[in-house]
Image (cartoon, rainbow, N blue to C red; front, side, top):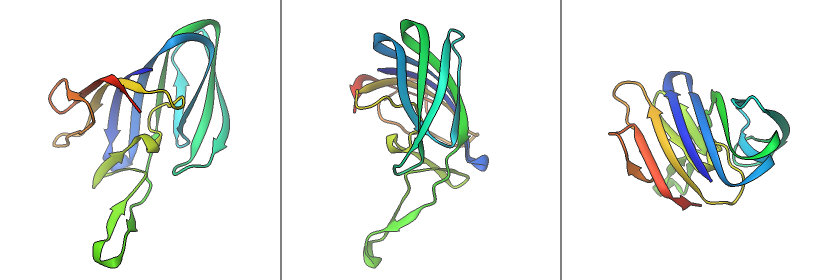
Amino acid sequence: MHHQLQIEILPEQGRLIATDQISRRTADSEVQFLLHAALTPVLLDSDATLIAEELLDGPVPIRRYRIRTSTPRKDFSIAYQGTITHELTNEGERSSTRQSTPGLISKNGVFLAGTSYWYPQTGSSPVSFHLQVKLPEGWRSVSQGSHISGHSGWQEQHPQE
């Protein structure tokens, strides 16, 4: 699976705004994905239907979605936005305490991992990506993969878990 992601992060609001063009290896007329429950997706393909399904337990609230199309296809596009603001928690013993979060967008910094479900995930299949990040002036992004345009673009051509 390949994600073509364009995201804007608004730290002062704790908000993420994104579009994702998802390409799969096989054509299907139905695709399921998981996304952080605080993010609201909108399907950009006119010949498809997006169905919100159940909430799932996890390190963050997750919602399952289903996309149905009239004919099998490999690609679909969605836009989504919302807030991810899971507080920092202390881990470890008093002498070696460290802080962690499953996902946080704040004026003090941003941390988004795969376990934040900040992008659509369809299961255990490895993913590759092209990521463009828009941030406020003075902010920088870091991601796995290679820089493609200064500090705002990243790509990973080899599928990752």
